Length: 472
Image (cartoon, rainbow, N blue to C red):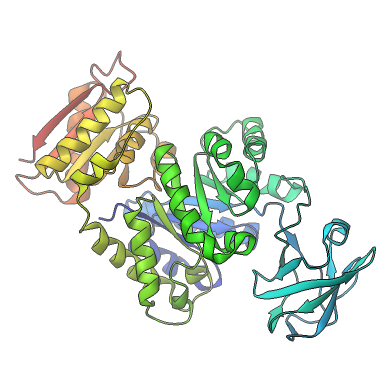
């Protein structure tokens, strides 16, 4: 059972019950629906399918929705696909017009006002590069730097222009309301630039009486990198969105940024997810390249919590096969990790409280006795996250009577979430947890299990005991 989690994005290639089921069974821990592209009807059907699969197979698959964020998209075009040819000219025009290969409508006049001669503009997820060579009050005249296709609503990226757009649109507020109604587990916030963006979303959730949805900030622009400490402080985690970072800062800078952000998130004990083109070749082919395998391996070795599959599962020809391949790579790399040395490498700068001391000791003990699992009873999920942050060698079975808490642990490294009933005593809690873990992991006689929890259950609200048991 892999400890590095996998997020699978749904789309046209993975919209049926059967494909979603096979993706989950093959290793996906969290299903992602990007509301920048998906309709509410699509999202509702997908969520209901995930819930049905969880019920039928006894699983706790998490659900993530992406907001659209303050992104910029071109207007309508005369055809579904328009080819732009290298070295020709195209005009970007502010106004309510229909575009073609000579003129492209843009929705904000600020794009024209703030762009300068020599600026680079990227269209359709950076598939096409333009350079501004002249302008007037309502038009940018641009040179097309490479052949490519644009579609209606294609994205626009202008790395050197800050348009100061409002972070929460009416559409994204509707996405948040929908997320609360459907009881999803994670909101991935697109185009975050500062902590106030995250706090705005948090305020909306408070107004909707929901404090359970975890907020994951997507780091995809220069401003977010400059404000990363403050963003991490108010977020439950981050997604390192390598595609947009490459557009904003240059692809050669992305590997170093990825390393630094992963290390920082680990130090701050926040969820870290790496996204974009992990196995991009498998959109069209049944096998990845060696470079992609190495990319996945390095992300695992850097102790990230989860890896995200985007177009590979949403639009690719081999969604289930891609999941299986990534699962196989993760399994192989994790089998070679020296977890005792890994624990020594992990430093904690904060004052150690009782719960964290127990968490550290449970991981150290599990590594040394080669335990098959750490069983953690948790009401809020905090103890399970503490243990996960020390990157144990075995699964952390997080046992809780709160189904929402359980699903909210789906992304955290090494955690296997498990819903159980309430217990009246510590002994009963240990017994219930151990029996559930034996069934879940198919433990055999002689297997060792580290158990952590609270004693006495009736009067202590923090983790304060640890024991090691052998399966009878």
